Image 1 (tube, rainbow, N blue to C red):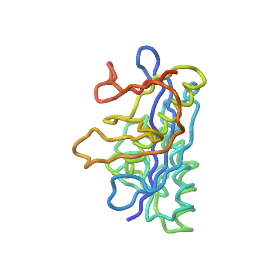
Image 2 (image 1 turned 120 degrees about the vertical axis):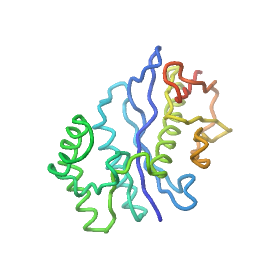
Image 3 (image 1 turned 180 degrees about the vertical axis):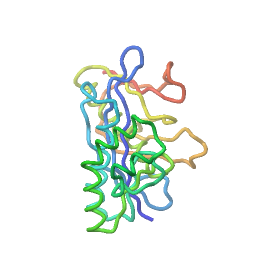
Image 4 (image 1 turned 120 degrees about the horizontal axis):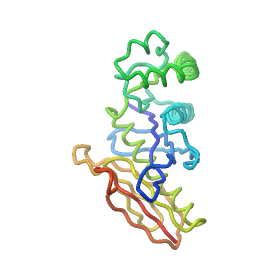
Length: 226
């Protein structure tokens, strides 16, 4: 099975280690043996002017996932929304009302479905490929989350080159290393079977460190300065 998935992750942190806004949405193609991505693309947001309600992230993920899927023709698309794996093309208002999710979650999906449901339905009619709201139960979504963290680190390095310093919160149970001209991101959860991702970067003169977020257990911080 060839899976396209998308997720948003990585946040600029303030001096108290609280998130200001999210940085990167990544879409990935995942194939057997399902430990990393065969291909990845990214969309960067402005973390200093970001809607943390979840609406922006879900819409960006759906659109970027579709963009990659049109290129690589997968068997299915997985989105990071835990709705039990329901097909997005079926998310009309009565179906959303019947979901066992919070009222806030329903309100977000009522708004998003006006755009995403027709897109998903049209894509399914053209290709037969379903877009599933499956969430972190999907290994492919978790790999997309790791790539979102890696791309956030790349963004952070480029930002620090201009501004001198930045502190980034990584996704849960994730750490990163910079080895020469590559950023390597690894899952720290031993139950996940060694999931990882990597992307290239240009050589640069900067200092970096990774350490636990002191106010958010299971989250690591990537800090870079020039």
